[in-house]
Image (cartoon, rainbow, N blue to C red; front, side, top):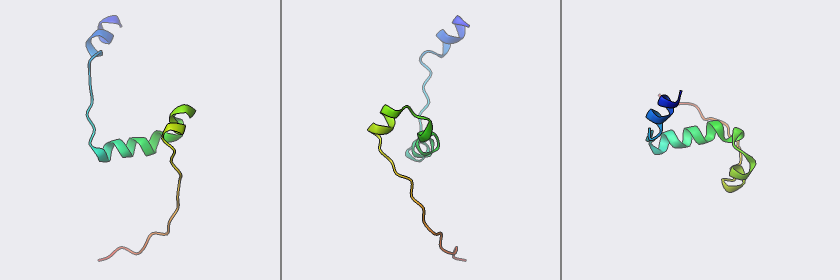
Length: 53
């Protein structure tokens, strides 16, 4: 286990802006309260229009 931790210690994953926002929106509800207070988001609903052909 220690060898795996040492090997992965500096492993970094880079995300695009789109990926970052997708992860933020997906996991926002699971963040600790202090993080949610620092990143105040509100859920909103809207009616989708018909798709153009």
